[in-house]
Image (cartoon, rainbow, N blue to C red):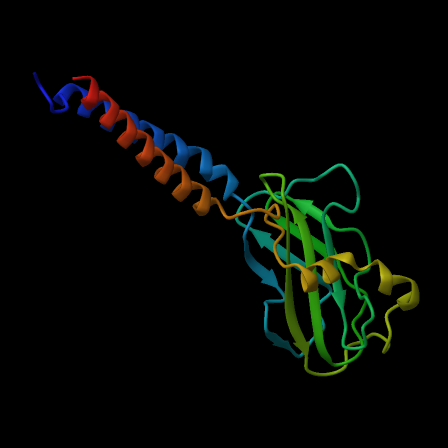
Length: 196
């Protein structure tokens, strides 16, 4: 009467474990594929002598166009709290651009953005730059009263950061799957050895 586990069963269990782990890692890769900001103009933390005419954000993957106008947003908030973006956001592959009204007051400006990532999830972040001297514009942006409430990109960036789907990180699922897989293989091997 044989009480051990045969080499064939061990080999099959090891092959099944490896195949399952590879499948889990392959399926987890798209979930971690949110766009990452790789460059901005103005750069985060920059001190500028001249006011920029637009904001340009460059990502590591193409940004989706989306169905509505409000899908991809950039809002620039000045030191006075007014919104300085002047027109629609333009998406061209990995680049997202928004024109600005001529900036006025010196001080810190906040760029808040929200874009539709390549994997379909919105990504938002907040960047800052400082205008060291007064710009060519007035102290308040045109239409400042009506523009202030409609700056959701900056508000989202302040309140939430990256919207990574609001769930648990992918690595937690991978670790849980590996633990469950290990428990399943252990039970299968023990059951197989009990039958021998």
